[in-house]
Length: 83
Image 1: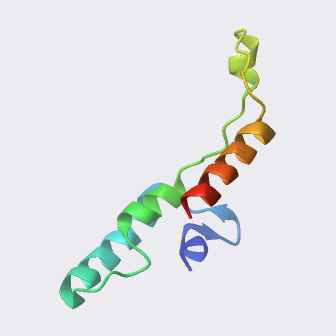
Image 2: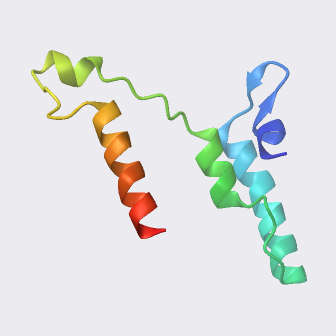
């Protein structure tokens, strides 16, 4: 439902409108004392671009020490041990 409010038929609606809608839900949550799935923090999060690219930092000479595949595998092993 959050995605439908943040994006419309023409794409991105905008952070200000999304946060405003979230504030309305904040007020409803306060009045009803319920944790609603939509709030201003979530709307702000979903209305901000999170498309990060590594090209710029690699152009500056950064080389990662471990592959993503290795680190995901280590994280999964750690998680399964904790479980």
